[in-house]
Length: 284
Image 1: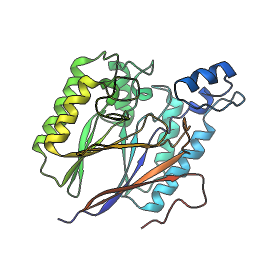
Image 2: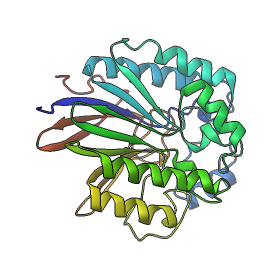
Image 3: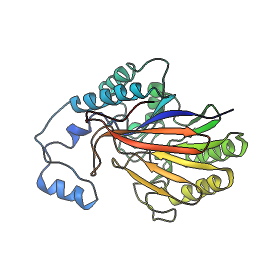
């Protein structure tokens, strides 16, 4: 069967982050800058009007591209379990044509009340609102594996659940009879190189190494992720790790945007499209 379709990757709509980063002092902004996080000085705001505007634009542009599906790579909201944020995200997502499926991927702000340590209560609440936190699906001859990467970053409070996901990826990859396999996550496998030191920005080495071994052996050829709030693309000879800029608040030089991925028999091609320009590319 010939493989030829496109999908849209969104990352970090993160309803509530504009308000969270508003009204910071110069000292707080400098402290963020030392971590490589660019925060703009603004007056204090509340609510999520900016996120509503940007996510609405993302859904409109996604519809114009007429993709097979849309995937949202985590940090859907800013505060795990916040009912107002969840309701607004789902309201806007519901504006997408029903023929286009939205695939949700959990981020640390979605499954951890403290934003770093998932617990069963927050995971259960996520599942009630957005479905499974890890799962697989297929389109044409491509297998997509979705993981809850927050379980695979420090401080690893749910070890069994974390290793269960590594086993899930291995099982899926070993048994897949597809043209190619793509991993979808919130945290990227790595941001610079596979042997980089552990940090809050990528999957921890004790999980990263076995996942990369699976990728090498069984042909996981790409990992699409978010979390950095900027674009970052790195490759080895067997996998490309594509971290996309945010739908919501940018923390680097890249503007709010979306990524269109074209899947063809020859491979994957992708391009990042800013949301707030007059033209986001020519849909095909």
